[in-house]
Each structure stands twice: as structure tokens, then as C-alpha cells.
Length: 99
Image 1 (cartoon, helix red, strand yellow):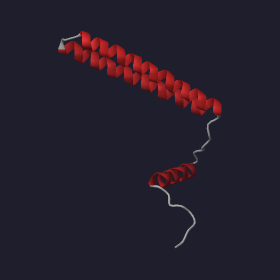
Image 2 (cartoon, one colour):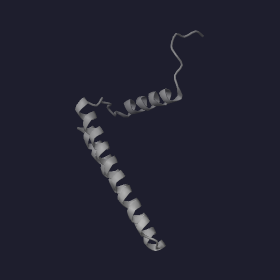
Image 3 (tube, rainbow, N blue to C red):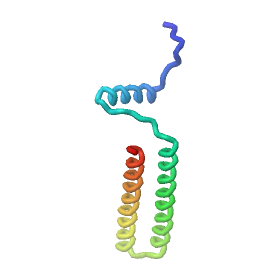
Image 4 (tube, helix red, strand yellow):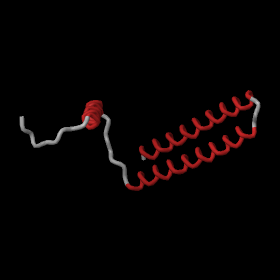
């Protein structure tokens, strides 16, 4: 059994199976254009900076507060706002991918 083909990693095999499954399901795979790649990178950078800014502000508020109830409220707000930003980022990226 001497094949000239190199062995494939489990990731490559899984990706091939998923691509075949998508093709069988009628899902069309289109490569992203350079402008789409740039727009996605810009969206990711924008939202990563917003998340980082939000985290710095959250840490500042946490240091200023000693009350456990207030700290828990701040933590809950932070998690909710962070999840909102992540959701917005993912929605924007998906919109860019669809064209």
C-alpha cells in the first residue's frame, strides 16, 4: 500500500466530510472576495476594540465598588453587554459573507 499522497489530519478529513455533506444538501460554497475579507477583518477589529474598552470600564467600576450586590449587578451587566457586542459582531460578519 504505497500511496504517494501524504496522510491527512483528522481535521482535514472532517472538513472534507462536512464539505461533502454540504454539497449533498445543496449548500453552495463561495470563496470570499478580498473586499469581503477586508470588511470582515475590520468588523472583527472594531468589535474586539469595543469589547476591550468595555472590559476596561467594567474593571474600573468593579474596583470602585465594594458592595457584593452592586458587584454582582455590574458583572451581570458586563456579561449581557459583552454578549450583545459578540452577537452584533457575528451578525455583521454573516451579513458581509452573504454579500
